[in-house]
Image (cartoon, rainbow, N blue to C red):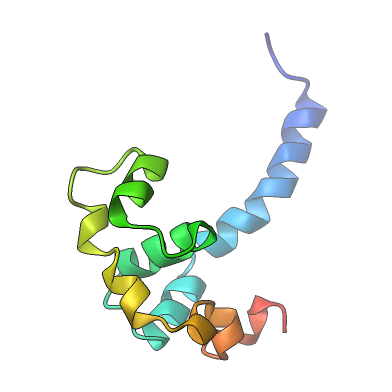
Length: 101
C-alpha cells in the first residue's frame, strides 16, 4: 500500500535533523574529546548509554546486527573510560555549543 506523499514528507522532516547530527562529525569529535579511541567507541557509548552500564552481551543482543565480538571490543572499555559525570559529551562541556546549551 503506497503511503500518502504528505506523510512521507512529514516523516522526513522529523527524522532528517536527527540523522544530520548523528552521522556528522559533531558527536564523533565530542566523544574523541572525552577519551574515546575511535568512532566505534563513541558509537557504542552513545547508542548504548540508555541501557546503563550494560555488559557487552546485552548491548550485542539489543543491537543484534553486529558480528560476534564487535561490541565486546568496545564495551565495557567505554564504561571504564567515561565517568558518571562525563557520560554525555554535552554534559561534560567537551561538545560544541550545538548540543543545546
